Image (cartoon, rainbow, N blue to C red; front, side, top):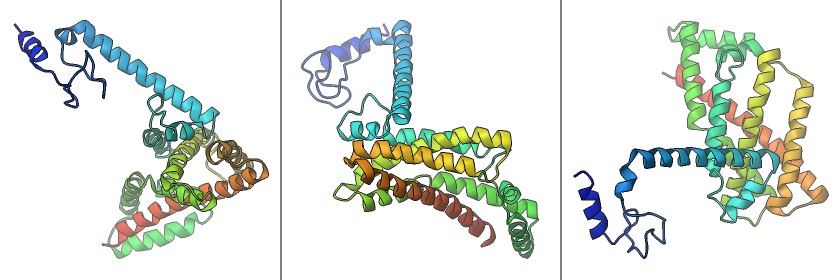
Length: 278
């Protein structure tokens, strides 16, 4: 009895249930949708469909990550060429990379978005602590209460403005590579920043093991990795090759570091203002 309404709907409906376009066959020629069928309600079909969706999404993620890491620039070219279904969309892969990076850098030990960690790891940490403690006293707050409120605002701001460094880097791309739509720069920026965030997740393991301190060897390695990544990506995306591509890659590495530094600094000072402005 439960299947009768579905059967009746299938017999009477001549339109796609997804987009309303008249059907020319079993599946919609526009969106691929199909009318409901009693078979769709069986446990076997439900489990099969769920398994298919999971494995399809899983394969897309691994395919996208492999392309993002091992073939710089290719994902952007594929997306702009209209080949989108086989990969995770640029914004989604960025959100995934940001979420992983943000989760790691808010963990105890190497909590980048934590004023306690900032004070402990900075050469000017004692001076910063004194200034913040005085600001807390003026507002009749304990130091720990003020620090907790700063951290809450800081982490909220980092989530809220997570696309800030993406747009910053995209503007840098627009200045160096002209006569392209800004949307193209934005796609390339999403993929590039996603790579840097995933690379940051790897360096987090180093910081967790050896502590967060200035290590010029690691800094040079990071700059070399980003430079090599962009040097390989620029010819695919913008067609620039040879020494010109190397010069552009070097300039964009500086832009990447500035955008990331601006993002962290802006969200931090905004958290200070939100904590002590009232």
